[in-house]
Length: 231
Length: 312
Image 1 (tube, rainbow over the protein chains, first blue to last red):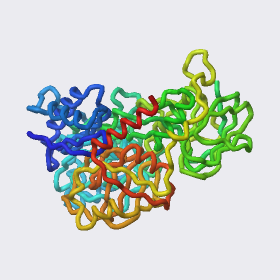
Image 2: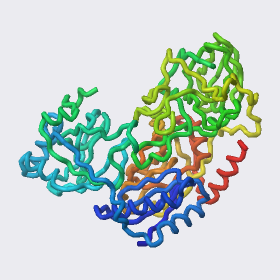
Image 3: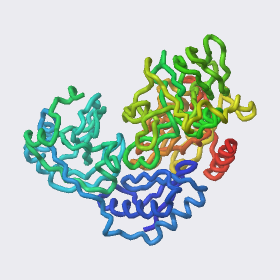
């Protein structure tokens, strides 16, 4: 694997490993991320992995940064010991907190129960975090669930909302505007400034959604107030 | 202990420092003073660590009363600052006696002024910084990402034990070292990887025509109006976005992404403005015109190093 290195800013370079989104990219991105962190040490300012790339911001002259990247990624191999964490994330799938659940069912010709089963039917790698702190872009969902974003985004989406956009899926860590198709809600706190590492999800982690009933959702601390009403 | 009670504030008056680092992979934005050069000068005037927390005041509308005798410093825009009606020159340190009122009224030159106190302002450090990011509810006085509010009391850190005031205070920033806020600044842009994928006359126009700052501007980004740029490359997959990225959405009108930008995105980019260019841009009003100058990464890096040396 020969990465391409591109200029992005005075103190940043882009390492491009792949040309297309693929679930198989993430172990390589993780391996590269670890190598780069080790190689740059204190000179690393930030490292942003995403789908096919890693953006490296460093406190070094550009030429030196480039050399260090090349050296770090020489003979890159998959490291069995560093495959990211696997999370099971409980979701209460219901039209009252996921108004597009019936819409997706109608589009796909599946029943709501089948939509849920398909969404819970595989592990999704976390391709990248972005949009908001702790918001993980995951995928790819079964093609039958692929749905374009809402033509008009909602002004307020409740924290924990689980949604689908095209073949990606995600959960909103906090109340925010949002254009994804919502199908349920998780009681799990995705971003917590008191937690070690802050974000439950890290790039390269894998997520399995697990359907829970309303009672368990509430027991786990879920908030079932309607979309717009949540504080 | 210096204490300042806020008598007037706006959503654009916020506690800022150098920003958050090492957390971009979690989707957390950078934040921090938009004009980092002026922030540093404000702190330099009081002998503070250069990245100590300051108040960023955009466009004025900010007023404080001293609860005790204070030493303060102002750098950046000339926002018609006055102490009890007497003009205060920007780029200076000055005393604010107990009961006296400092007011920053409106822009006379530039947009953003930076107010410093000895040791920096006290704020709740969240993820390594007290930079206020309203959208992410991070930073600020209480860590919840709020802009400064009327009635709130600001405290100075005055970090050195037993030391009050600013023993290493300087009276003013030497004239020769003050940034010039040009009428029509030329902003250095480090060319990025998609630069060759802009077609037709786009590249010529990008670097040879005036760009006007749109009123759609905030701490996330500033839209520019001018000739339509045409991207002819392949659609992009979302990737990390550097500070100062000049991205070109399908309407062909560039957006300069600033400190509170989203961390990843998939629009093609001309490249990224240099930190020095960003400091200049932070002082430009909507309606102002700018030009871009293409620079290579190495050249921009050397210029940045030379600039950093002016604080020793």
